[in-house]
Length: 332
Image (cartoon, rainbow, N blue to C red; front, side):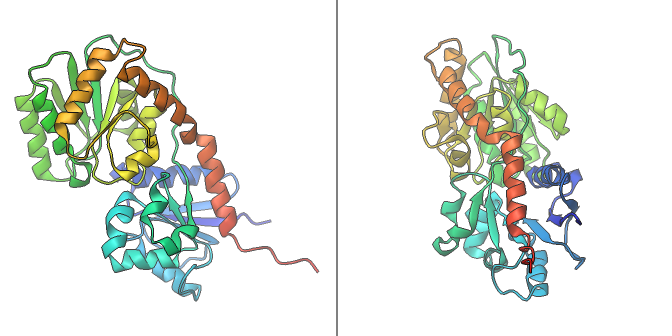
């Protein structure tokens, strides 16, 4: 029997080293034992059984051509659209192409449990949650002091890096905290702001873009991951921290709450740098206390870690593709 063929559309390439690309590459690997899988930035009309399109707006041309080729004005056979944070929390409210992608998809995939709430009510029945995954790692040794803080994310407005910089400035008079910031300057002006923060704050270090392996080591060696984003579809940095036994301090936005849970103790309001600074001071001061904030965050992250297991994601992706394949002909 011929293996099903699957095309994954990823607007990003390997060179971008971002979440979309890592999702595409990981899903291809998970499907390849049973499917023939290719990754491309667009669909050229070559026949496939299934199209998995990452990003409703940026992949909209490929999505529209697939639906047209299958004569479908909605719920096109074999088509799933994987929704990013900018899809869920910006584009589907205002962009006609993104809105059309929702209608054309047979299945809508969201990457955290609050995602379906952002969809139009009439389309939520098409949604399924697939948490992304990372392999669990044995915790790396973390020295008693200073408190090592890491933030991971390319410098762009959606990641709200200004919140980290303001927090770093508020912490200038406090010892015992170092901050590493990993990510390339997709916005040159933000790169200049990162350099200015380094000049003003000796404990803050902008490391620029790093290879994935180096980033994972930095997360595992940190005491705390900070995630300041304005919008997220399901942040890789958060799940990689959780799977590395590194607690998270995150902006209280739906994409982060959908990863860490509504009752998580490490949230701060979006853009609230003073609140982030206070949480970092509490983590520094309470890290050795069994009943302190740091221990609470460790327990809460450990409880979420099974959601991000590779086996769970692999099973969910394979089930998604099986559900998109045409039914076999009935036997006579």
